[in-house]
Amino acid sequence: MLSSRFRQTAIQGTVVHGRKIGRKLGFPTANINSHDEQLENGVYGVRVLLNEKEYTGIMNVGVKPTFDSNVSRTIEVHLLDFVNDIYGESLECHVLFKVRNEQKFPSIVHLKQQIMNDILYVKQTFKRLKSFNENNREIHAL
Image (cartoon, rainbow, N blue to C red):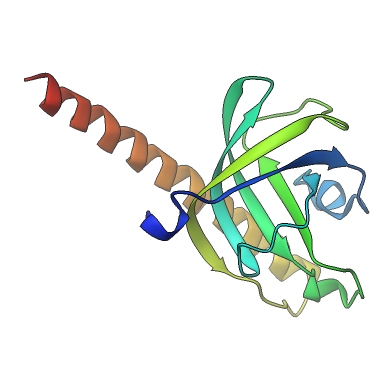
């Protein structure tokens, strides 16, 4: 789950306009203007710093193969339980764990279902991490 490989991986950049595919699917994303090559294409659980506040999110790194596009590699993050317009803002995404590799889906319906599953997995994983950290603090306080 939590990999030491990702402990120092952070991606920084400015939120720019994209093709709005995530929004059309019901999962708006912040496209990050970054040419970071640290990560392989895939989906990741991330902690995001925005205006000195921390959020949890799910980040996609890749070329969107389901859309048969000739898009260059993009980095986009969906902030969980977040609805504000953040174009032009700076984000710092700290990668905590990998959810899955990038893949091409047979249809948009399959992609949407997988995104919903990925978000559920990320929320559950962050809940377990929070519980672990709280229990760990209690042990150290003894």
